[in-house]
Image (cartoon, rainbow, N blue to C red):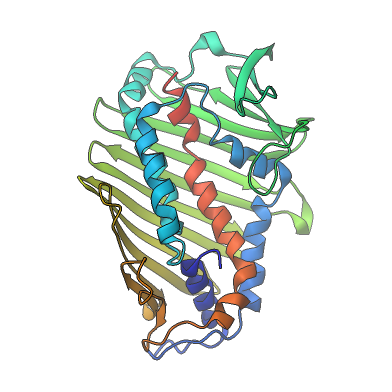
Length: 375
């Protein structure tokens, strides 16, 4: 099972689509996930393209200028991930590293805003390519593209693990374009196929900042590149606010065919020695709202963890988990206190990828700002 929290969410989606009595708080069993599985597969289809997978991988490899300040957060995540695997709390972790990175770069963002640019004009037109000499990263190898007020990353075929296949095969381009003015700091992120004829990702990021805080807003769309009945497009709006004490992310993704909305409201607080994550994740489909509310506390010194996560359908509690995730007695239970069955979880396994891809999309949208503000 990739994630018990995702299992809980989707299990409840199935129930909301067919078997849930909105006037009852009785335990809800897995009944009929097929209808909503189709809807979530449509979301997954938006992300399920070779070009998008390559873009998603590249957003975490843009570090032509690495920010050492985020390494402790990355190390912390690597240490606690195995402990959280069984609880599914991993669904709430993508924002921690991104928040820590943008938080560390807030002074640079302030300088960039004051200058009216994010990417130095001395870098305009540079093309970053995959270094095949064994270093495993993008480097500038001397190539340029004309009339680009920003930089270009070539996108390559990647495996399911996000690693670039070698020998490399180019499948697209990622342009990060500086649209800043003296009054507005703004980037455009544009992903196309290699020929430049199909757009997969197109959004803008605007931000404001001081020496101690920053707020960035991303607005745009993600597409599977198809037209007609097979076309899928997610429109989104996301805001990330950071200060010395933590960060907050608010995001809404909407799909029109079929009608489906995913919403995230998450905060990350750095309360030495703890990192405290509070999250509210909602899926709205077929006029029902499936809500997952979670609180995860991680002690950065001892690596002790406490989780408290509850799942609701239209306001009714249906599944929860609470306690130390390393203890065998800490497990998912339904509203009646009975453990969720492995059969139920197995039946939902094919739906996990849709929500996992949503997590990845939310987590990577601000990577261009966090990277290029540090140049």
